[in-house]
Picture (cartoon, rainbow, N blue to C red):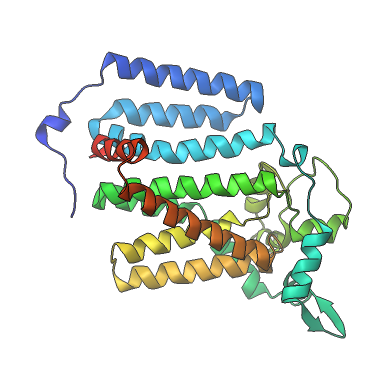
Length: 316
């Protein structure tokens, strides 16, 4: 099922019309980003890398065309900063905390604790490091897996990428319908709503302190909205990867590895107080729903399914 490029493909040149479209999209993105979220150096990096890959060679052009699906996800996620979800609906803080305690509460020393509170009291250096490693993989693993599929089976690459985007869109909708504070927010601020609360590393700070670095501090300083804990998309991403690994019948080693990563991220999300168990379950439901919706979509002859087929042809 491996894919190869043809000799004629290597001689292909970018059409003037396509070059103008890429230029217009690049300029439009930079201008809109400046208006909505302000200028950031990573915007130039994104535009520069995308243009370099598009104009370099035919194979890199196909690569960035397919990966534009992930670029769409990143742009939408970044633009959420301009439209905080708490503008549209009340943030759930105390009710979500009480629901977590009622369903998953742990009795410890005569008190009922949420799993987050339990692990905050019973943290261990080994678990701190392990959770940090798992949490660092939540984006690299899907991107690396997408890169593998691009060179192994481009139809599955497109299907995986679009499923990933669809799951994110579903998650974003829930973010705005049900704004929710993460466990660390309650630990720091109680049940009072404080708009524009900055991101926080929570339990992941112990990973940074152990290695004397600020990797998670840097990541969470760029968070789009701290009141977007439900569903946990961190928990959804590895499940999508695992599903496509099983669907494409990859080697047993790969299946076992992705299963471990999936379970590890689910545990780390709760252990580090970034998500409740309820958030993780919602992420699992979100991923499952997105997978089922996409599979149903491509089975029907609709304008959208035909567009998916055209994208597959474009990257082959």
